[in-house]
Length: 328
Ligand code: PBG
Image (cartoon, rainbow, N blue to C red; front, top):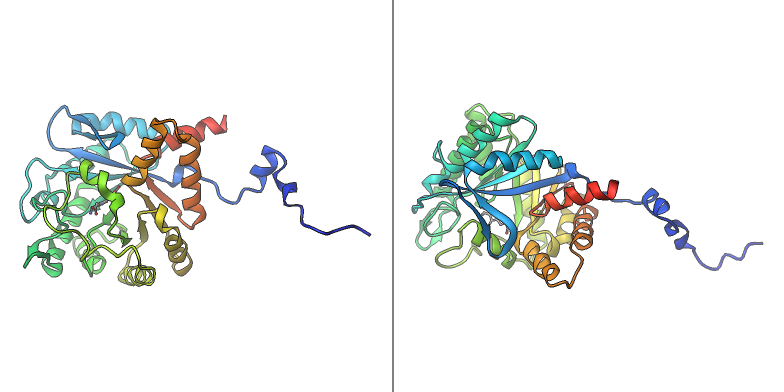
């Protein structure tokens, strides 16, 4: 008779090959999206002070950036634009010759193998820094929608493969879907920032994109970090309205939400590993307090284990390099 008093979990951890054999979650370069900030102007490559290793680049540096991403095998890029001029209605966002539209055309002339995702929002283009037009000291939902639709259409016209609206207006998926369809872009998917919290972790991004609200905050349109059921309502609405992908943002403090969205829906789920999450790791690793490679690979793996299929991360290039190293 065998003496079977306890389970021997360590049997499956005995060697690297055994551990890799039973590993449930694997990060692949195909899962990654690299966010990129393109700025109007010439000969500009400016490091974002709060995000070491992240740059605002002008279009003359774009080709070399695309070459680097393709050499690393990164399949996708998420574009943010920083215009020269801002106004109260964010005209630069839907200018057919705006900075993002130009960047998309330039990339598409160069290659067809990189998925170009366009962030669809007004906050980088408005002088007040909000994601829509202001009426009575708040962002007016229904007046802002047509501007987001126009932004999406000009991005699709320029050649964007995916439209990613991050403005958190109600009804944006319905309106953008209809606008794209009527303009002849039925086949262009919408990657909705469905679950976007009003998070302090966006701080460094607002440096990078020069998009801090000049008064108030975003709490009347972005979500309360305390809410879980509201996230499920947001996701359900967007799926019903026609979203092809659902983004949960930020990622690290919201893994429970990623899991629930994954369980409730059957479209690809995207985790946005945001700027503050990047900067914290950078700062700690620059101080020698943590091992950057190990920490980053652990957290990207955790996002996938939580249910994300795709991860948007400023670490995409590093992850691609580390995955290659680990393969060798
Ligand atoms: C635009 C937008 C933001 C981010 C992505 N799209 C900023 C915001 O809502 O303030 C944040 C990304 C990051 O922090 O990395 N609305």
